[in-house]
Length: 199
Image (tube, rainbow, N blue to C red; front, side):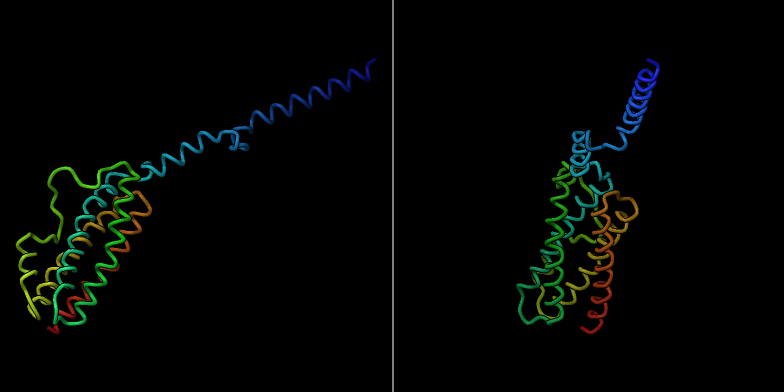
């Protein structure tokens, strides 16, 4: 009678040990049992948990800044008898910034943030309507010089905003775009200054 009892006790002890092991590791070793929480975390990350106020401000301010750069480029591309290098520059600026406008607009929508900032916020390098009127009216070399002068200031403002995002932003994609803007627009500033010196 003793032998079966010993076997039974051993089996029960093993079962208890296994149960204890399973209970102790369930939360860590079987995350698949909690799909609901994982899905919720992923969803919240995609819709705003991975951005902060600096990211939002960066996108909200850079969109109208980019829109104006595209507008300035369009003004130049509508002109005739311009330096081919300036036409190429205007084309390149438009080609680079149009997709970035769409990208930042999509981010704000995904973050459930408005695409426009509330209130009046000054952005470095923005042209006034009078500045744009002058650009519209200018022709030939005068137009080229004015465009370069205005766009250098415009780019410098964008670089300043982008550097603030690199320093304070949280969203990896937004910070990456900001770094790209700093690099590309600083290079264009140098190119425009060199070009301006030849006109």
